[in-house]
Amino acid sequence: MANTTVQPVVDAVPETKRKRFNWKRVWRNWQLYLLISPVIVYYIVFHYFPMYGIQIAFKDFIATKGIWGSPWVGMEHFNRFFDSYYFWRLIKNTLGIGLYSLAVGFPIPIILALLMNEIKAERFKKFVQTVTYAPHFLSTVVIVGMMMIFLSPRYGIINHFIEMFGGQPINFMTEPAWFKTLYVLSDVWQTMGWSSIIYLAALAGIDNQLHEAARVDGATRLQRIWHINIPGIRPTIIILLILNIGSVMGIGFEKVLLMQNNLNLESSDIISTYVYRMGIQNAEYSFSAAVGLFNSIINFVLLVVVNFIAKRVSETSLW
Image (cartoon, rainbow, N blue to C red; front, side, top):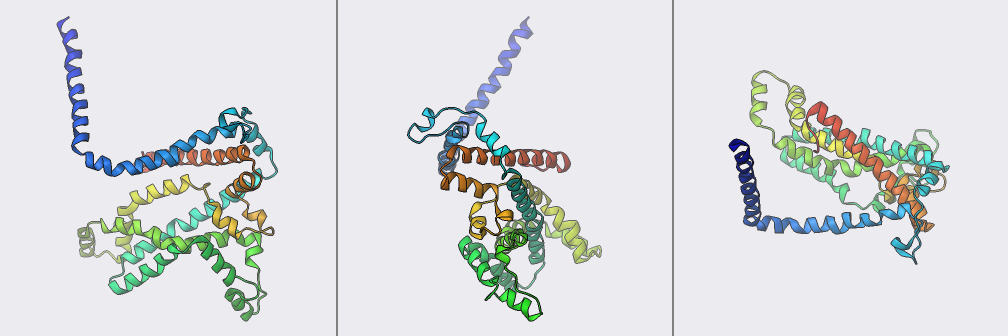
């Protein structure tokens, strides 16, 4: 009887001390918590608090009645979207651009980082970094404007080269078959240098003694890249791959909208542009909220599934 009575008391004491110790540690490092507090406030105000408006996806939102006063309609807006003519076209285009971007745009920054890491001439290395980083600072409007100029069927330099070799000019910006390729390649050109920074940082953390030992054993440069550099940055690659797959359906509408026209709409109409068209232009706020929520749920499911697979296969994951 004595043992059963004393044991809970003994177990409870360390738990109390542990809680007190945690609060003391927080108070002792209050400067660090104060430093991170603006970020926490930002996410609460601009990311979590707006979730309150998600309920309009399940209501027939009427501005004069407000969110609480609008009547509930349940899954009506979702069923309307699933049964619409545009559903499969939007899914096909959004998923097609997302997977295309992932297949082409994800490995190129890794390759660029591996190549720049092997450059020994510092001046040339800085020049390459400057050239590849610079497009990141151009706005989307400027990028699309450059594409329209370079790909113009009458004045574009690309079509001038095509005509020089006996071909016929191509109106790239109005051809549905060219839309995804133009979108992905221009995006890769704009972002590959900036995206390679995190891989360069990971490569800088690899112990140089591993390379020295590999040189002593007679390993070539390619063998050192394959057996030392790539395994060294593998956790970074996996984490970024999870994040990229988790946003494969989250294509921003700005660039697509600027490149979009009535002639390439068959290939360029994606979920985000559809939400913009229905929500902003047609003022169907509840319906557009339902479509956007559906897209976010798909991204969340992809993120959780890919994170689970990565954790089982490589023991590297977000959580």
